[in-house]
Length: 149
Image (cartoon, rainbow, N blue to C red; front, side, top):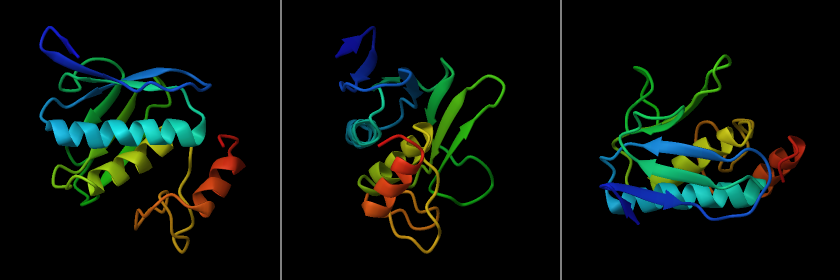
């Protein structure tokens, strides 16, 4: 849907917890946006979280942003940060990620925004900090441990 040149993507799910709007970098292609939106939807379903609305407006507005850039000088695929003072949230996604990998990394970072922690490094899964894999029973157990699943 279009509103004054800004594409709005509503993630339509039912859940509990605070609702949030993320403002994303407008430089993402339609295919990349769909990958990120699907990741947000999947993680809301898995964690019983409220839906996110993603507004593709360069991430300049609001306190929750999706940026197409590295968070620091480190070479990482993504990172989630939240200010302890303002609760402003930022998801950083490496601009070199291909569709598919972009979705998995976005799902991992949205997992953090729903309160999930990393799995132990030796444990495969979506929330593994080193090798982001597919959602599995280890992720589900970690999600249940924090009361989200």
